[in-house]
Image 1 (tube, helix red, strand yellow):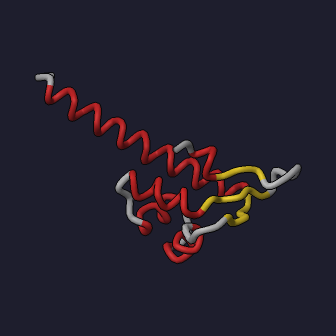
Image 2: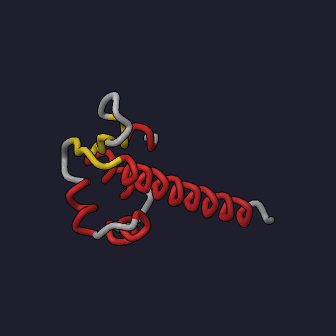
Length: 93
């Protein structure tokens, strides 16, 4: 699932974006990241993260959507780097 599917523009204004709660939760959980850790990376409280992950679509300021997208990219890159490190060890590198 792509991070662009999580946060989409809600209209002609770039001021707000729609967050797809269920997709955000599935992606975060798939990355093996707790709500608390993900929220801290985004710069908001765990309670706010829990609200964002409820089923449905939620309007958030574009800046907050950017923070969510950046956190997803951070954890995806970390997971990829971790996976590549394990592959190298398996291949004798």
